[in-house]
Image (cartoon, rainbow over all chains, first blue to last red; front, side):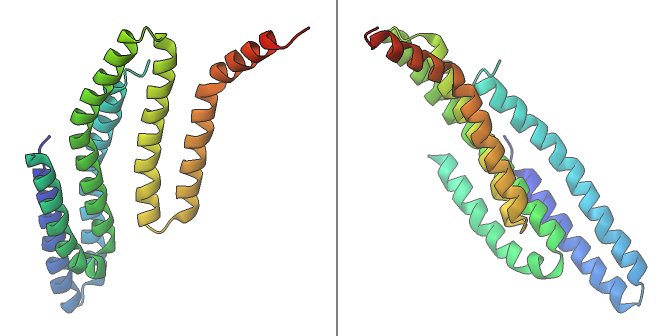
Length: 65
Length: 130
């Protein structure tokens, strides 16, 4: 199990936060909102794979069925 | 021993990053903590699998019926998943969803134990004089 996904998410979060601050300062609130929403969706897509893996691993470790 | 150093170090680094992210961008902060919990749960599954194997070996040596051990292990698995979901929901401030997840875990564990209860009841009834 690699932990690089956590660094990826943290980096993406910081990057989007900084871009968000720039966009808000430039008065583009709409795009700032869209950007933060896009970040959430991207990270959610990464996490869904991880959640599926967790469920499968729990099943195999405890020999569920 | 590398595992615990990795988990603790990662947790401390994340704590520092979260201080910043929670104020500026709370959605990503939640997803970050979710990713951390997922990774730690996945890391812990390996050692947990070894423990499960040990328990199976012990049960085999004690000539315990495999069915009883299976019930126990399934209860542990349900508790594992329910803890994961409930803790995350509680972190995000959704106390009611967390409570429902915990309730679902308890109910499902009880349902898993129903055959054991009936077996116990039958044994007790056999002990009673007619």
